[in-house]
Image 1 (cartoon, rainbow, N blue to C red):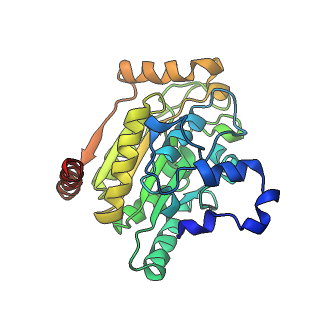
Image 2: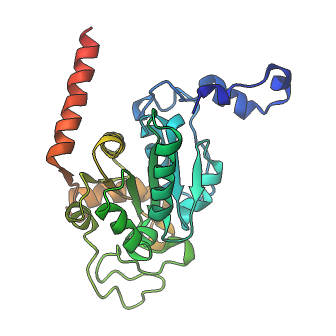
Length: 290
């Protein structure tokens, strides 16, 4: 996509909303901004309709700020809390039917390769645990089996949060929720291990409290999917509404789960992906020296 598409026609500049003017003048397109630059540029999302203290909203803000090339990125979402937010994101995005987001993303990625053979278009799937690990698991795994060059990002709030707090496959065993009054009866799905065995070249878990790690793993996942093969990132995104804690405690909750090991931070990189990513680091060092 040419960045000229964002420029305003001079004849209409005086009637354009101030928000849009600021996005054109101070937005991240083409500038290589990241999480460490937050506060210094006009973000692609600044406000949202989600609950106060929503870990998912924080995770999405950080993910969007971490995309290597946002102007060449298309996000495919699915039904869930995040779908309420995407209409307010200044980024190309598609809403898919619940669970079929990886199938839609597959067709989109292939179409982009045909339409723009000389340009990389990153296709990133962002969905909750219900759409990724439960209802959409078949289509998610099939895209991994086929080695579709997509990045799949799960916003893991460990519940069906937007429909009343039912347990999901990602809920912790024995956890009591609004609609699981006697506690969940089976363990949390080990989706990072499933992703690794299904052929993902890059797999990582992180929490919404760890902004620098989110930036690192999202960038590496997207770059790996661009050149090597499928990638998967799982982000712990605590839900204060359904898990009944105070909205200002979300970050502390995420940090505590990291510290006590109940939400382990893991990273798997295939040999091909490792070689590719190390090559990028060397190129960056060489460019910096010169």
